[in-house]
Length: 477
Image (cartoon, rainbow, N blue to C red; front, side, top):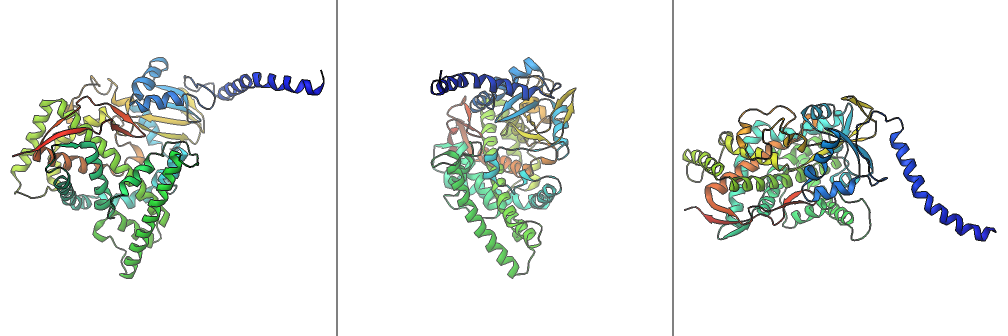
């Protein structure tokens, strides 16, 4: 056999043997020096179990179709392979505490490349240690007690204006879409301090579509469209930031015009504490974090209230009692918000059953020893809200709706709708105000009913009601 005849034979032989050799090398690389890693299955090389994970997530059945079967088979700690990385999934309050309280020490936040590029490399989600603490402090000052007191009447005005403009005269409305439009305006205008152009929400939604898409740049791809939208947002925000800086410097203010977040960030930029890129990236991140998840939480709260008439009656009574002490047209105060204890129990129970964020990835920056297992340096670690929210150890009859669970304080690291540890959601108080104030004005001004009481929830990339949660409405007389 001469060389010309041998070449096709060798090529054919290689094509047959290469996949087998690759799989063997992959298995060896996973097992080498990892004898104490948690049990589990890594799936196919590179792909791992990513497709199964995404399929379950898209149907909003991540717990039922992906996590629970593996917990039954392997226990509360198991390994898998997701999005190109070997990953350990931890479940339970002790595991959550161990992982989240060791932020910056053993693990760091680890988001997909597409998310980092679109949210911003200089955003707080990418910052570690002291830099994270500095940015968190600048953002958090806008949500101090005084900041919250100032926000409440502003949010009340936005909610009432939105209902007057979009609900009055209608007999049917998309509750989810309405809540999303409203919370976006509140976050952007009321909290950040930037007037919203009618097209701004649509541009942000194009960015959101690409945050978990493969970071491949080719015309027409989700990621490509998202990057283009992100550049539009950056251009707009840079112009606003530079104009505000100019005005503040001309007035010789270190200023906090009206206590708005953007003015505080720009003041920090003038003092040299934060860069222009950090200001832009953190505004983008906060707008995404504060409005999309909040609108879903609002929708799920109304879903649960409608499905449980007794709950509806108790909630209405609480808001009627608050209204008895208000003059006609008088806005709510922060003290009124504190009286909405039952409403907040209902909202938290709704978020327990339907968490707006299923969990978050971390990356081990050192070999981690936990519960007799080794999580190797460089591996991803995932905590999920489902690991405690749906566990009878923490919530009796966990799949039933029972707001009274929250009459007493819930143990730490059990209810994780807003995360935990150093990365506890910095805007959770703003989310709380948005939910409670919106609920107040809807239930006191309108009679309403769900058109699809059992409407399914889907995810793309965050959860949302598949039909937009349409409701029938009529003004109270």
